[in-house]
Amino acid sequence: AEPIRRHDRAARTPHDHHLVAVPSRGRTAIFGPRGLRRLLPGAATLAVLAGAWFGVGAIASAAHHVQIHTLPGSVPAGREMSYVVRPGETLWSIALRVEPGADPRPLVAELESQLHGKMLQPGDRLLLPR
Image (cartoon, rainbow, N blue to C red; front, top):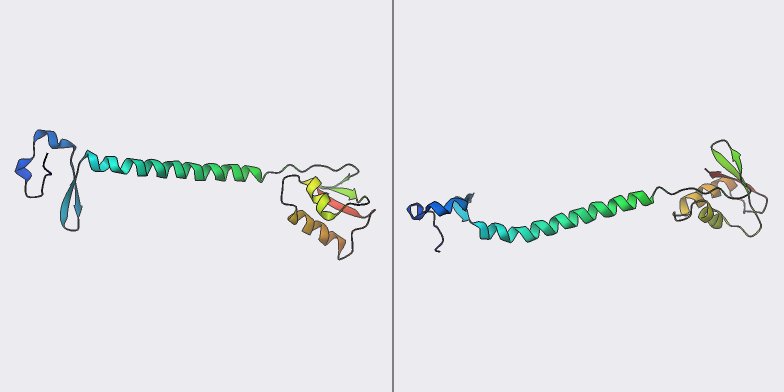
């Protein structure tokens, strides 16, 4: 089958109803089902990538909802828990136990601010989030 040209309008047959005329820079281009079939793999790939992007985002946002654990020896103090530091503990180890699986740095920074520049000593009281 010979391609249909712009000036060849009389050559169209009743079976040419599947062709689409698309204006392009002053010319009309005719696309048949073959041209559209070439776009399908790219569109499918784009759909899969977009789905993966949103899926990973949903999983990542769900991971930020970390459950906070109460440490043994802590006592309720309003919206927080009062915790007495034991020998050998560090701010980092306390943060890891309070929020397992989360990044401990924000909690370590919060606990450091409670010490007001002092070194952590056994017997110090810290307020931990519930």
